[in-house]
Length: 101
Image 1 (tube, one colour):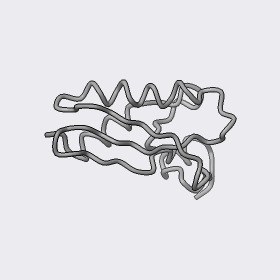
Image 2: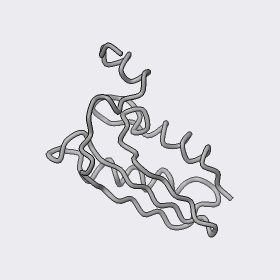
Image 3: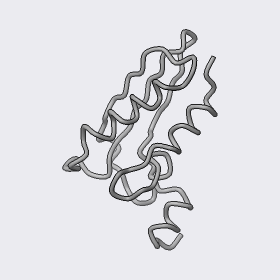
């Protein structure tokens, strides 16, 4: 059975291709749910609805999470509410982007 910690560790490895910061540290992951059968649901957003990587990043999340042993089906839902804000960045991401905390 996959654990929440395994899921988060994998999400920390999935980088935004432009910023080279993980989707986790960017604060793009809003919700995760692991079912008893190993299926995984992820609700995520992007920094802007006009992001040119609108299909690429969610597909990367789905593909990478699918590689974890014990994972069944992976459903990634892209949402825009609440809208992403820079405050959602982790402290590490803020530091890398030069944003004062």
